[in-house]
Length: 433
Ligand code: GDP
Ligand code: IMO
Ligand code: MG
Image (cartoon, rainbow, N blue to C red; front, side, top):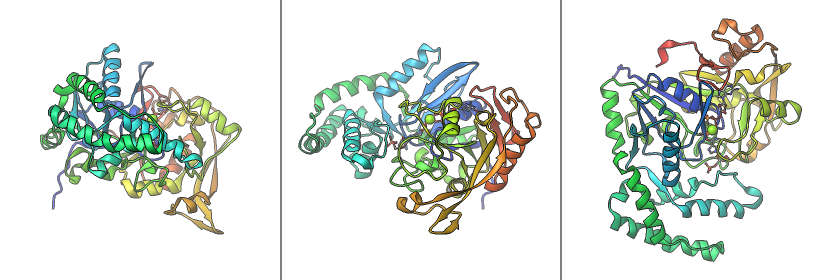
């Protein structure tokens, strides 16, 4: 039996995304040799604030600001080449070099037809919309599962790439024109554009599984950056109102191409309350004055779509589900400052379902939609906490709120965050990475 420990840390979104994964990845990336994304695509929107300067990333890992670390877009990701190149240029304009970026040759490519199909399928769903980001994520992963996907490495063989593209478009154009009444796509146009885009990044494409496997064996510090959150996981989230990949920690080995035993520490990134973009059940959702207040103070508008995020209280049932399926060794509590001045803070500790109190998430969305929250209430605090640098500097009620979260989830808090800036991060456990 192996008792070896590796210098790895996984940053996992524990709720419905936008918990602050980008901020925490950037924070730990200061010490990392490698930073790896394992799932999702440019549906992700990660905000990083360094000394008051705000950066927004969707595809490039949030570790890129440590120019001494290698940043990897792993095999489990789906890549829109247009977006990737725009992001590389955006970073360059801000003085950030992407020579230390590596792209998996096995990652799947998003094409313009995926985005179009995403948009048309959403329209087709009418009142059953998922509320996708329309970035072509679902249709791209669909092609992957159907075994007709085109991968980054395929572009090294232009002739075969053209054959794959032509084959896929033959069918997709039938669907686009005959079912949706939309315009067909031209294989030649996509071919020309994509080969042009590929030329800009081909030096960065490699077998990233070898890269990370070797790095871990050489005792390098490797950070895994999650996108989305466990409740959006295709298997463990609120299906069908989920994304098409597996944001949970369990999919890191597959999405990176390494052994499961290399994943040591998993930090669950947890908003001090709850948000959700897109449709689907949300038992601890709140409306009215407090929700509007949190939305404005927390700037809860989608990074990618600008959509207002739905707001709710912290949900302990959800967190226990998230903990079971992702195995957090500790939690980072984010956006604690947003709750300042709220008199009474609620925590959802159970659900009322069919006249009974339950402490788990039912498997079907129809059942989950009927769950009503069971609350406990905690007193809030009024003092500004945005300059706090230690747990002991927090007002007593804020300390008690954090202690309560740790107690009901059953996981220690290794970090808390009191503002968007890298500086506004209080690490409670130096050992985790
Ligand atoms: P991600 O998708 O998990 O990386 O999260 P997003 O970047 O989409 O959303 C988190 C938002 O909260 C961003 O605007 C961050 O700048 C901001 N943020 C992160 N941590 C804190 C915090 O502790 N306090 C406040 N006020 N904002 C934070
Ligand atoms: P980050 O990494 C929040 C949501 C969409 C929609 C559902 C499916 O910033 O936390 P998709 O386009 O993936 O098919 O949409 O998933 N969603 C996110 N919500 N944060 C994200 O990423 C998200 N990525 C996808 O809003 O409800
Ligand atoms: Mg986000």
